[in-house]
Every structure is written in C-alpha cells, then in structure tokens.
Image (tube, rainbow, N blue to C red; front, top):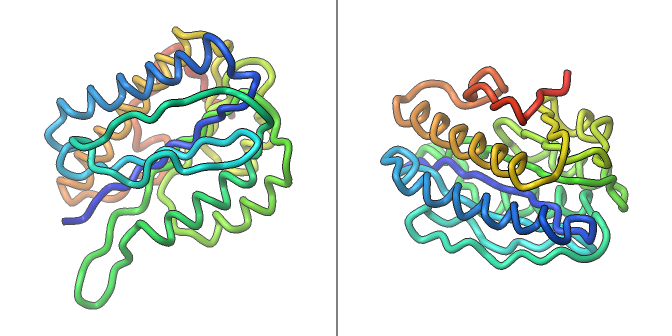
Length: 212
C-alpha cells in the first residue's frame, strides 16, 4: 500500500502560550477525528507532528490515522524553524518509503507549517536540507500579525495567513488542513496525480487568506 505521509510542523514557542496553543491542540484533535470518518484518509493518510520552540522534536512519528493519539503540546521558548525544517528532511528520509524497481514507494509528503513568529535560528540552513528531500506541497501558515510571511514565501509558494492567532482562525485553518488531507487521499486513491499546488486543495475558508 502506498501511503500519503502528512507532516504538521507546529510552532510551540512562548508566544503561542494561552489561547493559540489550546486552539492548536483542539485543531489537531478535530483534524484526527474528522480524518477518522473519511475512508480514503483512513486507508492512505499517515500523520506525523513535529513541534519547534527552543528545539525541534518529532512528537509523533508517521502513524496511521486510526492509531494516532494527538500528543501533548506546550508553549515555551524560542522559534527554531530552521531546526524543524532540518528535522523534517531527516524524518522524510527515514520514514517515507522510496520507490524501488520492486515496489512503488509512498506518495510525496504533504507538509503544513504553522508559526506565529519570526525564526530565531538560521532557517536557510534547515531549508537547504529540506530542498533535498522530496516533498509534495508545503503549505506555510502565518498565524497572526507577528509571523514573517516574507520568510515563509521563501520556504514555500503556498503561504496562507490568519489575521489573528485566536481560536476561531486556528480552528478554521485546521479544518482546511483536514479537508486538504482528505482531498489528497482521494486523489491518490483514484490514481490521479499528486498534490503539488494550492490549486489541488479545497479553497481555503474566509479566515485563511492566501498570500500572493
């Protein structure tokens, strides 16, 4: 079976403390429960969560949706986005099965990054590592006024913005991510092409603005 790997990179720095981190926790729970109701996602989608604050950590390795337990998220520390991108590249290398002459490998991973701030490390170094890993679409979400869309635009062509990092905006973002994973699962199940751009995803809700 070819899996559709999905990686969520979540900012858990100190500025996410309070309502934003609670909203992210609820968002992840909602995402998992809605994907559990989708037969395509249940069959093909595998989810991993990487958090980044003063260090980047993989809180959940790639796990099938039925077995996925949302990890505990706590907000504290800096915003080591570069370290998270490097860790993502490493995990894609370890976890995503490559196509060999004998077997079809996994589909290219979908990556969703959410941050409310400016990277506090050398993000370009991590990004250089990620560029060598084969990914499908990378969607970067700038949550609130303090996130740096200019940096995110260099990491991905698909950048979206939330006007605020409050619970309704974050919830809307996770709903859209969930719909996007469902759409990606259906596409690969039907043997169609992989998700490579925003046009392959459902249109984002009004709270989620595409940055052009």
